[in-house]
View 1 (tube, rainbow, N blue to C red):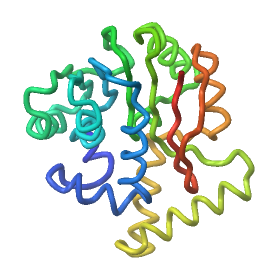
View 2 (cartoon, helix red, strand yellow; view 1 turned 30 degrees about the vertical axis):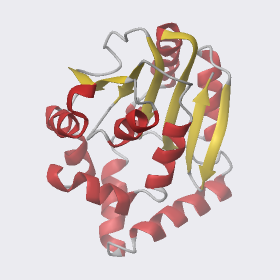
View 3 (cartoon, one colour; view 1 turned 135 degrees about the vertical axis):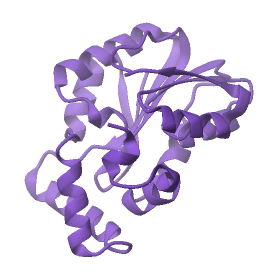
Length: 216
């Protein structure tokens, strides 16, 4: 399923709609791009989408090139328009794609599509093997609290953000549809999986259920 279809929107509306869905979207991407290692030459973007994070990355790292991996050809077409000759693309799942040697691997709102912890642990291990010495893995995602009351409060805050744009009924419908495919692991579980994959993981930004992680 393409990302726009999964979100229940038209592809052409993706960049506008994602901001109505995700609180702090712009800030998360800015924080992630600023966390790149110094002077990276090659950055791999897992689930590149329309290239919003990748564009910020090349702005921070003017010598860098992007390899974008995504299963959605429509999204990659939009990313190609945004990034021009700074990027090349692989139209396949990042769970099966060969990851080239690189200086950074980034993923924005993509890894929650991985259904099992074993698959995610294996991906982190592959990411670690692909990174050059001093490389970094940077993950932007929904990573709620493990404790139930806190997680419910975070979800309520997310719901309120969406209800600025959509009715309560529409918002419930979106969450119900996303629940069929998305797996939001608690933050502490994600950090543990990154550690099991060989990274020293740090939380560099968090607001509500959303966070930016860096694996060193």
